[in-house]
Length: 184
Image (cartoon, rainbow, N blue to C red; front, side, top):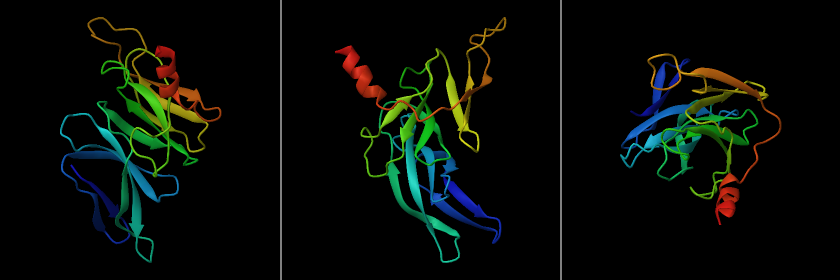
């Protein structure tokens, strides 16, 4: 799959991301100047996050991609990126804690940094699946899907439910450095 944008005024479609491999799940930045999305360009089923600055014509219509930045490059599934309304950071689901324990992470938006140099914070810490995170329009509430409830008879894992939490301040950045330091 590729990523396209459809202009409802002109009824024209414009291809944005057409690279080989799976591309999907795009979301616009709060200022509508870029998109974030997931992609499997290596074909290993480990989705990586990308951000692309959009190109516009003189009338403000999107004409394509001006520049693309890869945000992650690891052996994890990184998906469902979604911007905080401030535009300072995004949240996403990640399998960094294991493919049976997805967690929500945050990443500062810095298109000058390479994958592995991005500033990251772990947001959720529950066993099982935490994913599909989004913010309210004012950024004061985060909602996500989690499998934290009890199992219903016959289920192999708990069913998914929506969870919400108040957002107070910015994430606690630098979780990887802290985790690596503690393991020494």
